[in-house]
Length: 74
Length: 415
Image (cartoon, rainbow over all chains, first blue to last red; front, top):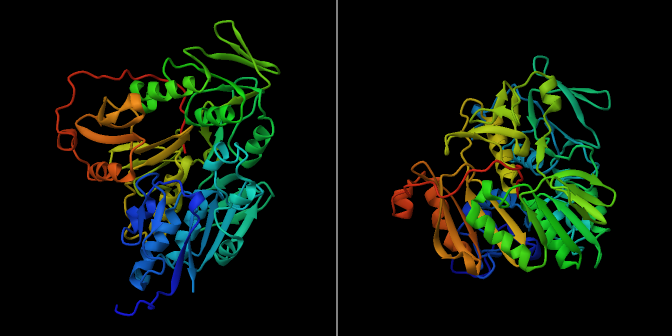
């Protein structure tokens, strides 16, 4: 991908104060999520993930124990 | 999953229990392409909401109930559910494949998912607050004011979290625990002592090794004849699975709905979350897990197996829980119960910054960490998921003797 304006069809929303640092999202979709070292709070590496990652992201949204993630269609 | 593999006979799914497990099942079914009817029955009048914050942010007055819904209304609507809230299942007929509801209705199903959770155990005679649902949390929250006296019965994770919150609000807190060391049965005596010490440092009056004989209006009467005066009492002595309606239908119940490794209890009947006991092939044992993450994972697993009965997958998760107490975040992976040995493999318990590994037989079965970054735990989780031996993971032979006494105390589960 050479054009930085190229985006996916969906955007990930993270409600950071809700995050409980369980890291379930990182386990399911390591290309898309990470955790901060200091408190384990989730970090979205790719807010508009490519289509082939969406299944994993949906799984991450589903297993998030704090309901802190949402995948919104753009 | 291919369409051909789906069971065309399944058109009607009834999910009883509208909390995290029931919701995950419904979402998993729709995500798996299921277009039939999903009836979601919930005993509480609320849309699915999050429970772990009840003993944390809600009790502390930091969050109002509007922060708790697990999904926005629009997402629930998009699932196209036949939603029955404030309705309880009273029985089931597995031969006729019908569920009886307290509305007098009988609802037919091709597949039934039991996700009815647990109820708080009470002391003989009742009395005191419990903390399981939103109303419980709001009732107790409204009582916690600076200077008020709270007595907590049970120093499990729930009681410990509530005690920590109440101290933070300026209450005088007494915790009574029948075991000599709180949580020793769950996490081992050494880790239990670390947690205990944190509460004592914060001014909690912790009385261990003594039972409670009675909850009365002004406090507690203890087995040693002493009393604890309190404005409010919280009873946090574990919970019992809501299996009465399943038992009436002749389904197998033994501390939970008894399920196989595919989470099936009978043809077309599945169990999800706190209420389900199933064979976890990763640990080679039957277990019932009351953790928040587990409910979601098992709901998704059951949805998959329900839609693909010819290719069922064993449900073999590494359980995970966390608990927040004061400035400590406690995180654990695996199945720690009944362990033979605990070893500190990183950090220093005295600093409340450490990782403890748990051995059962020759296997690494779990780890628990306080104050360590997430990436410190991840390789350990991978070891547990791979079924690693203690020797391979920890690098030392097991200790010659059991270092942790096994104690039987109240069965109190964290988030």
